[in-house]
Image 1 (cartoon, rainbow, N blue to C red):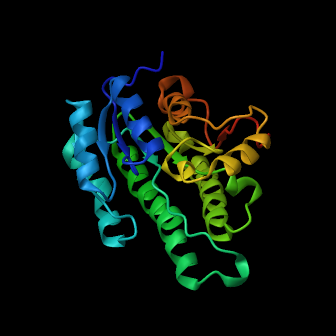
Image 2 (image 1 turned 90 degrees about the vertical axis):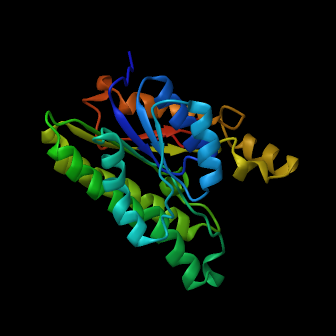
Length: 247
């Protein structure tokens, strides 16, 4: 069950906690994995850890020209693309009344526009494959479901990802390609490590599970959505948040 042998996967934001965990999980399940991110040195460290069946493809998702080339480079390296995980994300938090235009533009460009561009190019590649097979997994956020103070830009981008994924799912479902989202809640990553002890305790009180999740718990959801067993699941948002949002 959940065997990805013979499949090829691209994971963006692979230098982060969640992206790295997804790349490791896919690789362990037998996939050939292309890992992407801005920091080449960290990508090389992860590639060395994984060993065989891994390709390093640095890309700054704020650079539209680079984004436009990434899927083509991935297909050239691996001979095809079975699975796309749009995990990379950017936060530029500020209150609505004082948020600067560039804070809005930067977050939308990375979190929503680049996700659209990569989904579009990946879907084209998957539709050309014979037989058709494709799994598109977009990492959204609990913030995109019920909003969060100081994250008008981030919440808008993640809500946009959820709506966009549903539209894509309807278009490609007849060809054996699925498109789904994962909406993590508070996960133990470098971002949450910046919280102090009091902040962590207060947030945990709002979570029925009374704790933060782990990157591996998010990766487990991604493995399922990428698998053959999830062929009848599309247009869905898998909420991995310890019960923080029940929808």
